[in-house]
Image 1: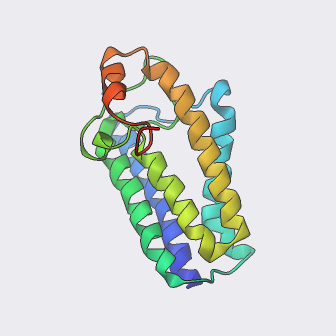
Image 2: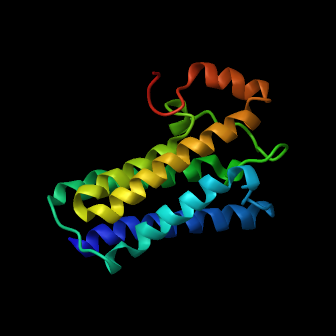
Image 3: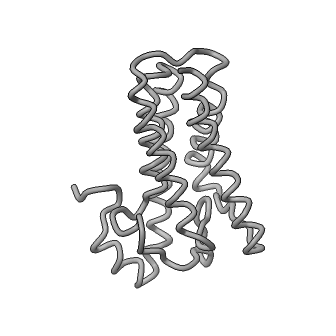
Length: 175
């Protein structure tokens, strides 16, 4: 169980980094756009991703193996959403560097499907991994919320994004 859970969590991080490197190479652009105002979210994501990779150092996975399936689906969904963004993929946000607004595919259901998948992955792994993953899930969730707020300030300057935001929920459903 531990190996399978680790393959899902570390495999997600490896896929995330590989997709990011591929887009950076193809576009020739800097994709890491976190600035000082986004430092909390940037460090939160780094810590959560480190836990996703390193948790076997401090604990073993246990519990019902059924949690592997939704965790793997969440990881695949996050990677699919990231890949779907193509050249618009960025990590962080900066005025003038938003790329084309992506509204199709998984972005029809959520303005932030990558974050939705990342958050779901960490929470679905929590029953298997325990406290280290619960910490990662809380950090991942808080970081995504902080990052979305800062992204929406920049994206809100774009009329196309504002129209998109009127019809598409921030997460999965409108509250």
